[in-house]
Length: 382
Image (cartoon, rainbow, N blue to C red; front, top):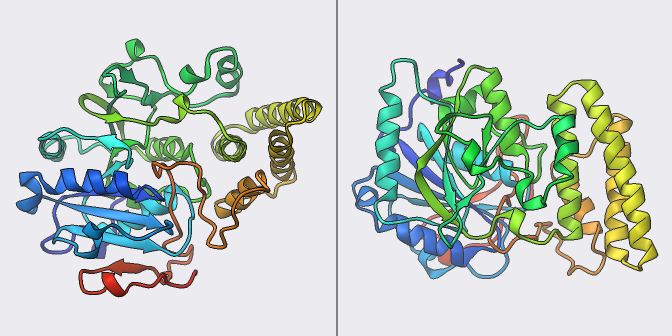
């Protein structure tokens, strides 16, 4: 397994072994609540973990808590919205810690939970065979029932079969089929990442704007020899999973693009051609049905999905923020936003802005410090 370059082989002196990363867009109340819980833990005051909040051009004022940051809490303001993968990569590079805990802003954690995570990390570090690359923890619904968080890698046959089961059960395996230990992939809502693994794969794939990026990360990590594991013994409440929400036209565009992109990058050509044909046919049929009943937004979304599929077929797929632009075009009645953030989810799931350019040069993002927060102005876009 590849290791970090010499200058990144260990965190800077004084940095804790764990960084908790929250990627935010217009979810400040949720972020504020989670940060309050984290900073109340004794392990935070002991300097055993830090908190990194990556904001991707949210609207409205920054909460008072973030205008006077305590030591151990860092805030990175993104100039625009590049997707969840970009936000995670930004937090990883900023943190410098050897372990990263990715949390959705809409999770609820119990008192003492972060201490248990630190205990798990100590166990992983002592493994003779080496630490895992990715660990997914258990998710629960607000009523206490188990929420899906583990899946198997997509294939053409599996994708076809999934169309005949309820949407709430398509993406994740049923709880009774999952056992602790090695799995194909885990959701990014509550996910522990080994920073050495992130360095070896180059971080999350920023071509994915929203969804399937954790699937792609798990596949690439395993291809390089890292393990992906599931540990239901540690869990959090996740309040707004996608499978429980209605799909908007904009979200439909994003999801279909992510599926096509995953097949294009990670599966044999015949399977990609199969899913491409299915998506094109679906777009034609469902687009025509939407026009027939006068649903202009759905018809427009399916037309955009067909154009995305045609781009893949011609060898010119859209990537990253280009997908955001097309998704927003699915709703011509939206409020214009020239910064370009994607506003599908008030909980801030999978929203972020660009960080470092592909060539490694740094965009002009701003890190808020206690002294500069009150006079902060949004930096220009890269």
